[in-house]
Length: 368
Image (cartoon, rainbow, N blue to C red; front, side):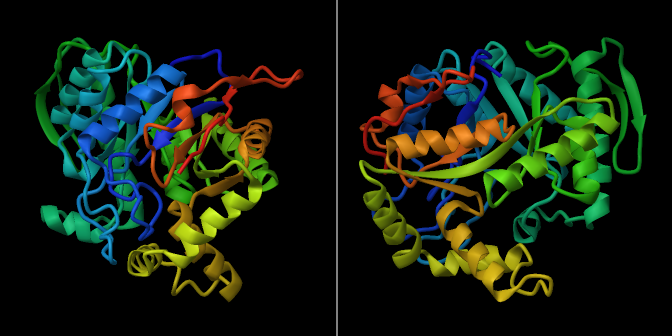
């Protein structure tokens, strides 16, 4: 990623979708206009943040707000942002079953050239069944998704790296005389992210991705997950970076942060949208989950799309980020309820520990 001197990478998550990663009814929630996306990308770029990471959505989650119901397609979104920024990376979140790999390889190469080598691929092998239904594409069973994904990424990588035309006769794709020019600016290919968590998904991730996503409940739990993921990657002779998704609630005082969390994520949660996500991810009917854990997951969906919640005053927010860095995370994809022009991203300064080489933005003004 860009700005390699920063040990701990920070990016903006889900700005391409209405509501971002918080399912809330509050009137100031993120609206996902193009002007807003461009503004926050340029602010993050100027502040030295590393990346913009979008959600790949084709429909909304319903509820009062139809959470994520407004969304920008991520390849063209990334191209637009990269054309008007200087240093920051922009990822596209691509569902492999919905786009032909030959077309995808060419499109992603084009975006990488627009950004001068600042494009990243977030590869997704499954997701929401109702969105696949919009395309008339069957959502494969869990194992089959990753078999399709492996063929897809193998084809794309060959197009990106090989000069000679090739044929492909696999279980899913049957292609003749495949090649592509120009090649991506990044060599051997653009950065790849994936969020495979266990089983076939994790195996796919550690074999193919440069950066993996993990979820956790505490920094200690994060350290345990990181050790497991790095161990799995090492079995394939690979070293991968580990990211997680977060949601940040930063206020001048800890009490104000706690009060705002209560306001947006509890008192004004979009219950209909949260319930759609909760059921769709199989949590409501999971017999392995206790009622307490289910309640916690429901709250996390409302607050942060299931991600890790960081809240407090500016110093507390920075300290929590530092704890995640020390646990071994490479970085975070950060969601916010909103990202107005008064965001501290436009006025960040580094906060360094005497015994650490990482540098994270210090939140100096109010974040909504």
